[in-house]
Length: 89
Image (cartoon, rainbow, N blue to C red; front, side, top):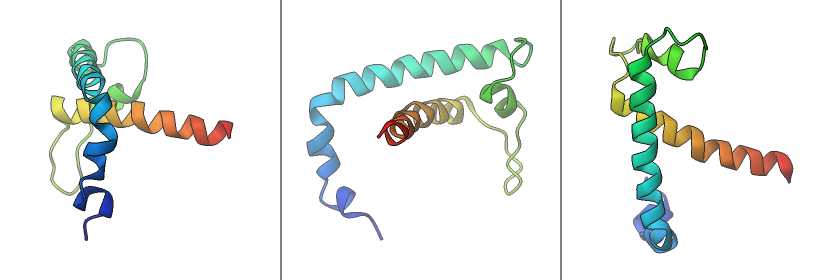
C-alpha cells in the first residue's frame, strides 16, 4: 500500500519551493560520486565507496552501478541530516 504522502502528492506541495536546490544537490552529488568511483580503491582511505566498489548483491550477483553509488550518496546526506537532528534533540 502506498503511503498517503505519495498518494495525495503532498510531497510535491512540500518540496516544490526547494525543487531547484534539490536538483542542484543531486547533480553535485552525482559528480562527487562519479569522481570517487573513478579513484577506485587505491585512495589510502577506507570509506563507504571503498566497500561498495567490489560489493556483490548476494541475491542477484550484481555489483553496484554508478547510479547506485549516486543514490546511496543522496540517501547518506539526507539520512545523516535526520540522524543528527534526532541526536541533538
